[in-house]
Amino acid sequence: MTSREAGDTAWVLDPILEIPHVRAAVLLTRDGLVSGFSAALSQATAERTAAITSTVQGACRAAAAAFADQDDAQIRQIVIESDHGYILVAPTRHGSVVAAFGDPEVRLDLLAHRVHSQVARLGEKAMAAAPRGADGGSPV
Image 1 (cartoon, rainbow, N blue to C red):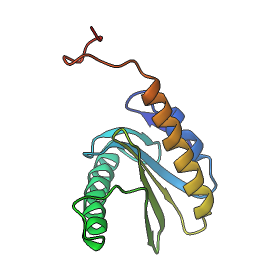
Image 2 (cartoon, rainbow, N blue to C red):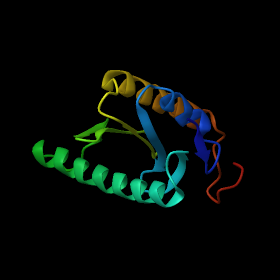
Image 3 (cartoon, helix red, strand yellow):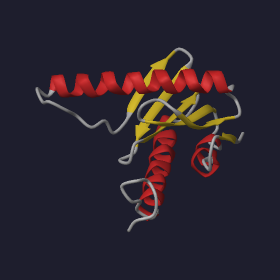
């Protein structure tokens, strides 16, 4: 299974999709815009999934902050278990989010490890990118 590119994202999702029983994955921005998605999803489904994932993240940040009696909380991962399988969501420090879905037989530990490995690689690539000027162009 490979990813569909909405940019140069196949390198992020493809290693996740190689895990047995992983059915789909989406790379999205923190505000719910699709950056890439697996071939198992249609564009419309990827967009819907990204929007829902973004909303879930916001709710989880609010819940974590409320339980800790703090103003804010940073989410490291969200795991949702249903009768259809598992959804694992992991945000990066620079605003992207990786979400993957595996059926009930997926090894959740392997899925979490691979997702977090790819999140780390995505962060390294973002840190290696040249900084931009205030107007979005090259730095002065």
